[in-house]
Image 1 (tube, rainbow over the protein chains, first blue to last red):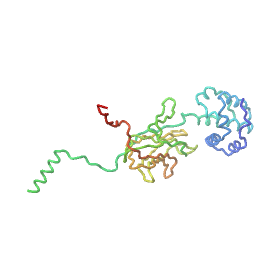
Image 2 (cartoon, rainbow over the protein chains, first blue to last red):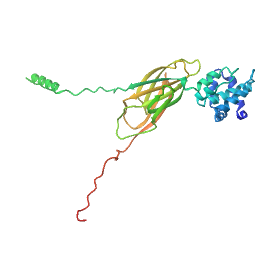
Image 3 (cartoon, chains in turn purple, brown):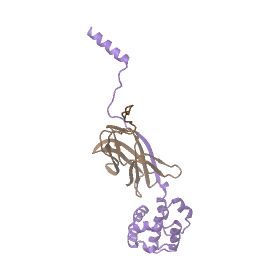
Image 4 (cartoon, rainbow over the protein chains, first blue to last red):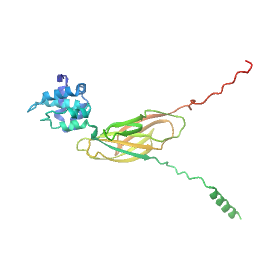
Length: 143
Length: 142
């Protein structure tokens, strides 16, 4: 059983009220210590706590607690959360986006190789035939 | 746009099935016997996150410097491909470090440095490992 009264509701409510994007809410909730403490519970415990906040018309407190639980779930294994997720997310407009942030598939990758070329040009040593031709040129010039 | 992680490693791979990033031999300091030295391979890694509504395309530069002197600069154009995070995993081959000091690997978005990783490269005494010291033999009649 999760005790959601440990959440810093005043601060979480303030963040929720000024949040204008899911990523803002996600980033600020994720660094909140009481949300991080919530993430110490099991996925099943978090989901049952999320279930308890479900209502036809969630109050502001219920919305704040629901988002805190959703962000706490992003600290968990996303595959495990996806398998167990069968919750009523009614009224939580940003729930899907927030859960998606925790998914490693939400990162694109750019891998490439860079070869650093030396800045100075180093000429290759002359071959024997080149040396011979230079010698003959010099000899001809001397005559 | 912000850099969540900046680090240098010997190598890095992204698992195709899970899309997880693994770093091998993170470089936090190096001990070198002789300078200048050529790093045959070094992999700077940057994880960059964008906010909603920020551009999908990222134009920036990888800059490797030492004591304020630029050793290397490479323009990088990348795309978030509709996702919130981007991992840049360039492998740099043949970087020349001329003298001991602190190497700084940074990513610039335009003129703004958004993330960096620094590691000291120090001179070390030549290794004695593997050299067998000759010992004088005792006299035969001893």
